[in-house]
Amino acid sequence: MADWISFFDSNHPIYVNARHRQVHAALVAAGIGRYLARPGLTVLDYGCGEALYAERLAEHAGRLILCEAAPHLRERLQQRFAGDGRIAVLAPEAVAALSGQSLDLVVMHSVAQYLTVADLTALLALFRRLLRADGRLVIGDVVQPNVSIVTDARALLALAAANGFLVAALVGLMRTALSGYRKLRRRMGLTRYSEADMLRTLAAAGFSARRAARNIGHNQARMTFAAEPES
Image 1 (cartoon, rainbow, N blue to C red):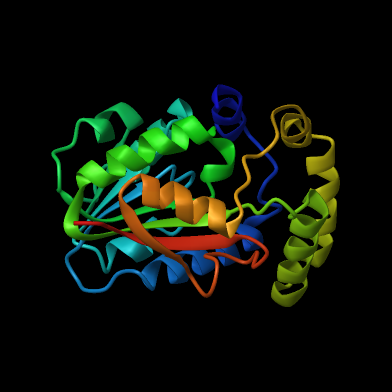
Image 2: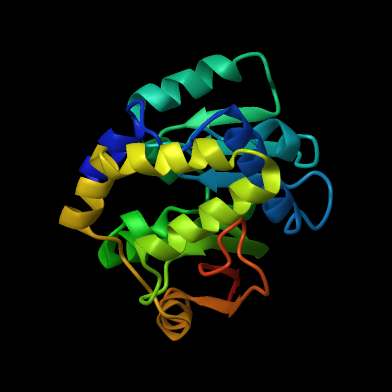
């Protein structure tokens, strides 16, 4: 996990250009927005990355807590939202110190693949403690065992073709192939779950869960799960 944190704390090539960032932010905001059942919720976005969509979520949530482990990225987020009373930016250890049953919604999008099974299990126990009895956990972008880097590339190219940045995406894929991302993915791998595996993992952590009809974001070869604490 430390190597992945270092990668995402660097000037990485995951977004191919500004248009890609804009489209990605809109898709993730819309996807998470489907789970904002009512105004005024206290929402935790765990492993938020650049959180390009945060302002949009904050318009509908009562309080948005962004949690990011990468220190330089977290510092930039803190500077960016310093004047916004709706948004707090916390390190993982600060989230772990939050009061029990203080959150209405926990979102962890495109993070599970970078965690070990033990890491995910520990986080699920934390989320179970932090969520209110009627709260909800959403885990997005879960990688299935049969989803390859080629599948991911095709999904990106389809998104790019539909949104006017195909050439940039082709160049970006070549940059990624030569970057630390591909080397890390080859060396460390991604943690993958079948639908049944993730449902069992969530059930063991005390959640009643189901796979959502659509994954958050552009890659529908990956999965999103919605879960509620069991009483």
